Image (cartoon, rainbow, N blue to C red; front, side, top):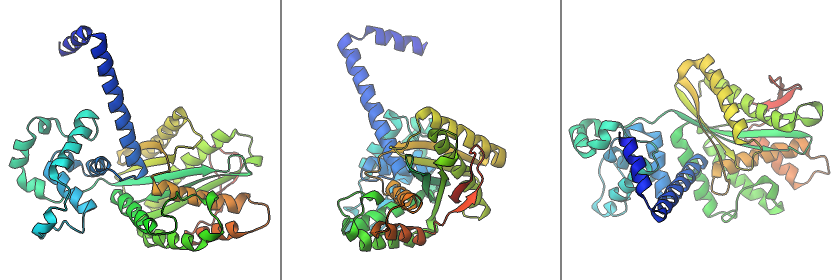
Length: 371
């Protein structure tokens, strides 16, 4: 009945009103996609992305604005927020609760993301008051691994897929922040980090950057896989597809086997938007990976989001690019050695990226890998 009423309402709209309605819906869809891309890329430059990050990581925050605000302050303003007590003067420095709530409302109500339970939507304030003890209890984050991947060498002898695995959801922010805090006062303050753009003067700054990455190794894992194009009869797109799939499946197996992660777990994947696989192929990769996870782990392991984002505002995608570039230099450069080879060696040594040999289902030649 309600659906028929909506159709009648639309029919009664003038052409101008209908155009305005469609324009508004298109604007919301664009904003939603931009938010998801920022979230996938680890770009925390806006309040909205920060709120979405908390809603995504802490399901309890979707039902409680108090929990949401507490987790927001704990995560993004730990130098100010202290559960044991906050100085009155510091209250003015905390992000205002009503700004956080306004962003939450837009994300949930207009974008339809990270929505609260149905009863909460209707009785949010009353329910929150009734559940005070539950609300104030420390919320547990979802168990999420985020994989940032990049590919290179598609027109060279070896094609390479490299990835950075962030082993907890919260670490995506803490590591991104560590990189950006260092970068803001470094010689790389106003540039993207891309291996191919390094010059002779970047050697010392690269060493500083790698120190930041190594300081966060507890939360990171690095994986890479490469295949020699001249020895396979498959199309390069099919090879890249299989490399991504193999890296995800065997990467998870490795992390579980070495007790770095444990089920239940969600694996979110973020690719550089310049990668070569189309949406249909990526959906098929996701289907096959999830099929393997279901066979191996039941419903306790699943690939969640699979997004392609610009590296411009993503420190983690830039790190994946750095790793891919270093390995590409090691495998594909055949000319005289220079400072670029020294830099590649430094990255490979610092992040322990020595490649071994393995066989991959679906690829007709031996691969080089670091899982």
